[in-house]
Image (cartoon, rainbow, N blue to C red; front, side):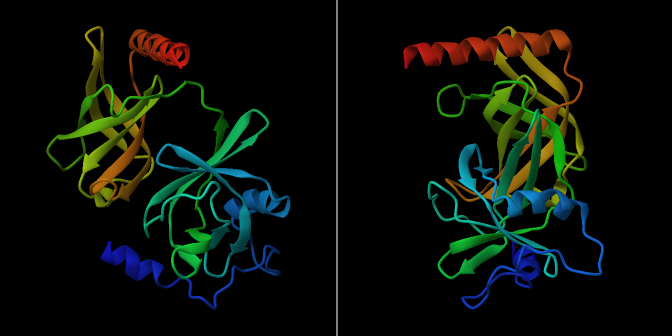
Amino acid sequence: MALLRTFLNRFVTTDETRPAPIEPALGRPEPESVSLLRPLALRRQLLTVRVGQQPYQSLILALDIERKLLWLDDLFPRTASLMIGEAVNVEHPMHHQLLSFSAPVAGWSASGQQGGIALPLPEKISIGPRRRWPRLDVFGWHPISARLTIPGCEPVSGEILNISAGGVRLSLSGDWRARLRHGDILPLCEFKVCDQIRIRCRVRVCAHGLTHRPWRQTRLSLAFEDIHPSVQQALAVYIERAIATFAHAA
């Protein structure tokens, strides 16, 4: 965390700092991510910002190419204070596609963790089909432990937070960010959803971030890479039935 703070302090704001304008800088090439984000900024399009799995709304205040920062408006509804380095996921639907990227919080435009939120300009923005699989939150009512293999480490145990037929989000105690990169393929993730459904496959790292709530942990979003189609279909049916049961009970 100390190294992250040192890096981000080159960009983190003071009370006198203001987000840079949205207009493009003249005479210099524009990063591809800025070209994708600029129309959303100019049209003040609403974005979905996920902190963990909790969705909020925001919009782009400014694109600061000089300092490689993206400025977002305050989240709505207001959330508990974000921490420097905490990962957020930003999404925006585009026709039948979904624009998305993940980034750590770099700072605020005012003191007291208020005002516009600064994120590093993303180097890469994903554009793909909207989420195909419904997602089921299991943390707190249906404990599922997972065993995850990270190259260069002994297998570690984590707790699954939510699950879909396409992947899982889980937490690992401690800070594992130095061992993980976006797009990494982890050789093994295994867990049991129920007696009839056991998952054992490779997974791809889609996002990860550190949180201290309620304890110091790394949260990872993982996509299944080579799950057997019959197992995936059984998992999809299980999740759909569980969601329908909860909806009926409500």
